[in-house]
Image (cartoon, rainbow over all chains, first blue to last red):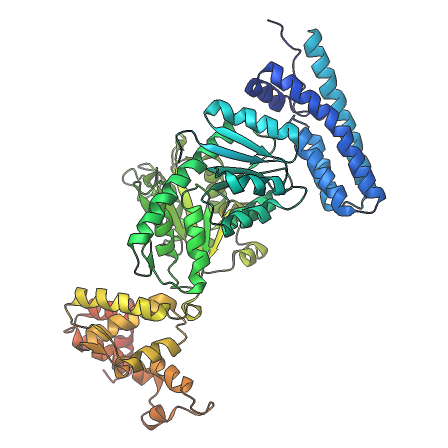
Length: 123
Length: 461
């Protein structure tokens, strides 16, 4: 049986909680986990786009809502850092710096998750 | 409930909805998914799930809006809230609205399955409770008498919260029935067959409180001549009620916090931690937020204890409940004392309703006990009631304010005289038995002894 590479540590710089990822894969099974993780990776940029659009249109409720969705979506895959920054954006949707920090955290989390999935497939 | 429980997952992120479905189906549940509040409503027109698994943030409405919609239609399903970190306060609010429990993303399949299974169990118990209430059409709810509007939210919270393991913080003025309420929570819970242990933190010397709650081993301190289990371990499998919890000193609060976090108990003088499965209910007549601000109550402990807040209304806000409770107490005290009191005259009822009852239900109980002991039946007349209760009715009848009521002005007496007369009458009626007279008056025997001594010292006794 192919063993995936070890998960990142919970407080690794890429902000993914390896315990959560390992648990989720065990709960779902490798195949469904992979499919849903890819769905999440595809959905995250779209949510981020919704957030930027809401900010441009000066719709703070839309910004908060998109931040919440990103938090739930990536948080379930162990992106604790995204959850932390998203919580700030939800309370301060007009804060451009917080929005930028969220975009960066989302990019890092997606990159880390994507790399891990690829390594798992290759491994 | 169908043999295969049904769950409606309301989650607007398809990836997560599919994840939760995959968590629940292997546990033998039939799962339907709705991606918005509107879709959920449409589903609920034809589908009656046992449990709603509900995201608080939906694109077209909040999860709480959907919960209210479900409640307005009387749909008998339990709700489990799922929420993201940072929205925990909203999730706690949803429990006040009747949600069974909440879980914070990310969570495991086991966590969701266990929570949904507990919700299914509560649904089963709620069905049993509804049947019991139907039988019990006497205005009483789990031993609590009253059907005023002010008590409706209390009963609703009791019914919703009792089957969960959530910690409950009961607030209310002295005498409003906080322990009775805690007992009702216990009796309506799945722990009803377990023990209900009550500790009054204000009544136990601070030095002894730790060992009273957590127990001690022989020799742990001077006077510890034998092992003591303590209230927490005695309540294992049941409910631990901590009355006047704000009176606990800060050192013991730290130990209480550890207990809540670890669910283990370490007896005084012992290294071993013992597992302890209890549901905590606490109460205070103080404002706990003010106690936190004043530094007398640890904030982290307060949040642990205040998962569900339940406020008991004062008796003055409970309308005709005064009469329901008065009749209930009259019947039980008359039977206890071997008297034949059956009811109240209309004048007496008006007086009971007009009085403000600063001591709440406890004061009402004491007044009625005193009336029963000092008089003969079969009716309680206005004249049997204490002057302060009667005065309220006379003032309420439209006598000019600012001057004493006419009926009282004629024979008005200094308050000390009234107290002395009442105590002496009680002692005579009880054949000189001070403890019994004290019980009838609703005071401690020491109060009567102290008064008698004072009068003797004044040379009047």
